Structures are given as structure tokens and as C-alpha cells.
Image 1: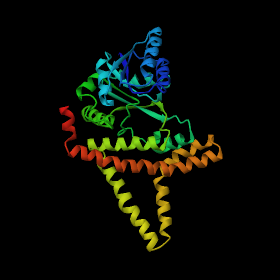
Image 2: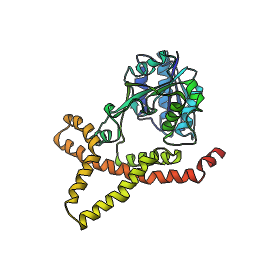
Image 3: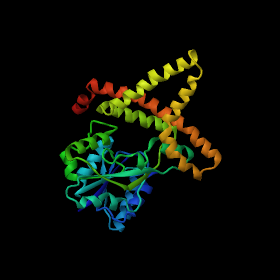
Image 4: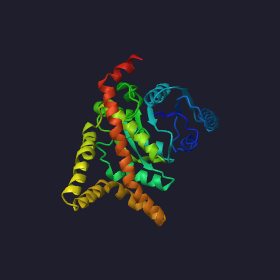
Length: 328
């Protein structure tokens, strides 16, 4: 069984060396690494060229596919199409791969009935904000139902034949493309093998502005693909109906209702608090308090970004955006 690792990169000169160095250190080396380069304006091409030479000295193959202007789905499809391996393992810039990642991720393919393997990811924070960000936006393993878990394309592997059978990543979708790809694979091939030990270390967004942009784009992608409409509807109902009514009642009926609002807010932060709590041990007391203070702010910024992005995606879909993109 041959294995290719595929990546898409754009202006990733700073984060790329960490990823490529961790790829070179795999206990099960990839048979080939194929990188779709999206037309970077920084030193990314030079970094790739340097690592291609380093890989060659180790007997590893790293090839770069030029993909200027391609979105993530297009880049992944071009990299996969260029790969010659039987099994494709996908990861992404901005992560670090433990040495046993590829060995663990590809081991289930010894069973010919396995078509897709879901890995996992963990936060790799460098700042107090990133520590709080990881606890808020990334699930812990105990939060995951293996039967329904949809892997991020930071850590997933599939047979190239399975990718071809579902038509690849949906190129008409600029964000949330891996979610729709996962759902299409599951509809055709059934439950994925889940290997949580095949984890990648992912650095969360380093600023609230970056988080807002990320979640706006994710929600816009959900709207374009009609993904998770119920969850988005619950969020609109909570922020546009329940919260204003609770504030109005607290101001006009009873001030004790502020306590109800506080308890509701704590319930909303229950999962991030549970994830963050064990991570506070390594922080100073001021840093602990700062991390706790970040949680509601991160939740609010992320939710507002989703509220803004989802209707933009819905409008794109109902106004024929997919058809127009197909005509390009």
C-alpha cells in the first residue's frame, strides 16, 4: 500500500517549516508528498524548494503542483490527482505532526473494507489567548461521538478510489468544503474508522479578529452548502429572541432575572470551562484569570461572526451562486 500526503499552502512561509520537518520525521514515511501551491507572495516557494532538496537527500519525494488562484478544494483535488499512491492522507499548514501520525492514520487500511480513516487534532497554544481559544473552539476527545464525527482535513486519510468515486472535494465551495466531502464519503461508504491517536497539533487563531474572519467564512460556507440549518436557527433564536426578552424582563419585571441570565451564560460556557480547567495548572494566576475572561468574549465574537456569515452564504445559494460559479 502506497501513501501520499497532500497539502495546500498559500503564504505559509512561517508555519510551513514546522509541518514539513514533522513530515520528514514520520516513523512511517510517506511514499510521496504533494503540495498544491496557491500562488504565494511570500517565501513559501523557496521554503518548498529547500525542503524538496532535503527530502530527496532522505530518499523522500516532495512535489509541488502550481495552483495559483485555486481555492482549498481545488488545491486539494489537484494535489490528489497528481499523487500516484493508493491512499491519500490530508493535512494542512499550521499544524505539527507527531512522529507516529501517519503510521497510526494509515494502519486501518490493512482491512480492505476500510475506505476512510478519521484522525483527530489538539490545540497547540503559544499564548494565553490561544489557550482559551483552543478550549472554546476545539473539541476534547470525550466530546466526540466516533459514529458521527466528521474529521477535519487536517487529519484524515482515504483511498484515492473513494475520493474519485464521490467526485473529490466540492470545488464550488470555498469554505466548509471538507465537511461536505466527509458527508458525501459517509453517504457512499458508511462509517469511518476513527483513530484518535492519529492526532495533529494545531495552533488556534492568535487574535479575535482572525477568529471572527474564520468563523464568518465557515458560516458562509455552511449557508452556501445548506449545512447545519438547525444549529444556525437555534443560534439566531437565542440571540435575537431569547436574549432580548430576558434583558427586557430583567429590566421591567424582576431584577432577579439577571441571575437567570448569568446561569444561562455559565451553562453556555460549560464545555469551554471544562476543557480549559485542566489547562490552567501551568499558568500564573493573572494568566488564569485572563484565560477565563477570554471565554465569553471568544464565544460572543465567534457567534456574531456566524450570525453575519450564514445569511450571506444562504443568499449566494438561493440566488444561483453555484450555477454562476460552474459557468466560469
